[in-house]
Image (cartoon, rainbow, N blue to C red; front, top):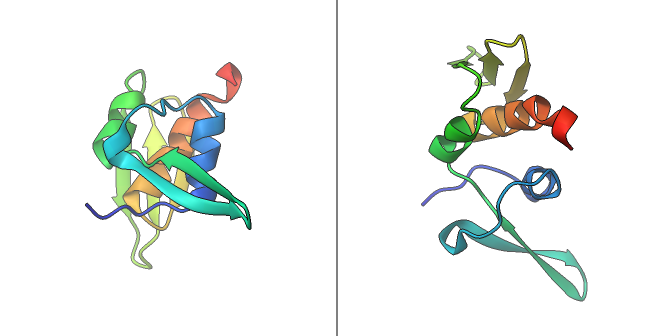
Length: 97
């Protein structure tokens, strides 16, 4: 499986309450010289499903940048569809954090 999300974004998801119990999508990063951090990297399907309360439009621009929009006027962008929807999920869940 090819994951297209960096550690910082995956950690933001974790810190915002993204479930960390799916071992098949867990990846380890060296967080510091003596510490390995494990975070779940959600799939695009999981991210879209998690935004269940909002309808999502996902589009790619000519320069390869991805944009996600919700019917609640929240929007986000990223280098991959996963990144764009992950950022959208973070924005949609800001009030809950």
